[in-house]
Image 1 (cartoon, rainbow, N blue to C red):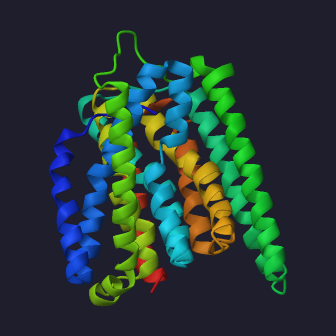
Image 2: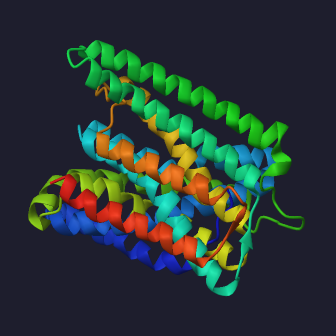
Length: 352
């Protein structure tokens, strides 16, 4: 999953020491805001160092590395939210990441690219693979919810078993998709362009990746600990924070990369970043967090709210319809942004 180096965001690293100071001083609202801002450049550094390592590893192994590490920030934040028992927020964050990539990122990319290019083309076969994977993931979200509706007396053990089975199936299907996209049918998807070389040494890339991941963990801890006090002080619904704010913050660098490639009429790369990331969250990150929750003794089920299932299903169907012809323009980008705005405003009031 290619990414653009994001030096323009590195000035936000100043919020790392500021957030530490705010945490020590007990200033909870300031801690929440500054830790959230600090995650933005750290997520960008994780993506950039991963991409540097991927180039050195070559197309197949590099692609597998990107596919595995592409949403490391979401995993780290999710683990801390689960440990704190913030299950509603972590579920909303997962849904928000999927919907944000499909509607907000693609909308911005299509709109920005469409201003410079009247019509932009991309590989509909690659988009179809991601689209079908997302539909399967949506089905995986619907089934446990249907179980709760049709059998309201089902016990906690039943929910736990169904959640674990659904999560396991989605992970296996995601691994199968990786084999398809990175090995057997890699020619349909992005591979590093000829002449693309790593500008960082392997040791430096590993060091930056490790340090950034550790700092994301620290900032995530600050973010989660200050979440409830900040929500109370700012009067913002918790689920809205998870559905809209945290996904936008955690994926800001990746969003910039997608728009960058769209402006240069490289829509195939844009789709891999946006739609590929959504597929990974739905079929790998979300199931992974279910298993992590079991390991740390805070079991989280795989049952999402009706609103969450509806918005992710709608976003998936919209993107599939738009990608059928392998062509797009600025109008489709604006339409995607309009759909995201409607969801964002609705989420604020639905979650209150």
